[in-house]
Length: 106
Image 1 (cartoon, rainbow, N blue to C red):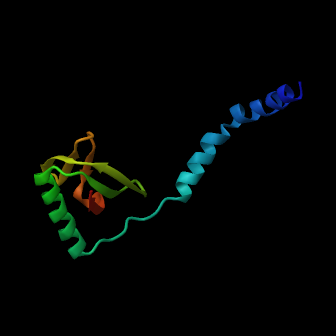
Image 2 (image 1 turned 90 degrees about the vertical axis):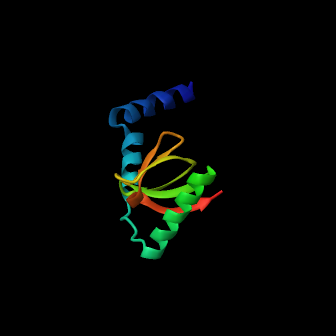
Image 3 (image 1 turned 30 degrees about the vertical axis):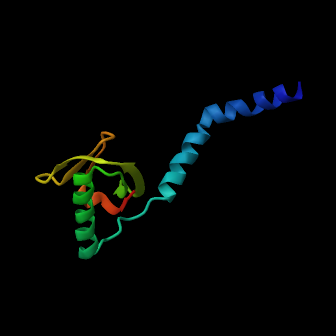
């Protein structure tokens, strides 16, 4: 009976204030960072790696910057759009050249 009372006691606070959602939003804002600047050499190296992996259809690990956070994705390249500087990955993700920070061939 004691456990039932604890559950009843704490359940309204969580549903009333949405503390989990609020806590996740606060943590996401705290981890926000600015976009790192890349040198010309790194940009050229990234472009060469993209071309090599596109022709060999090898999997790559891409680190990219989006909306204040740095993400990593493992996939292979499906298509390039040079006009709009877009990269289409096989997992139906679209990235721009400006977003890419690092590329690692797997």
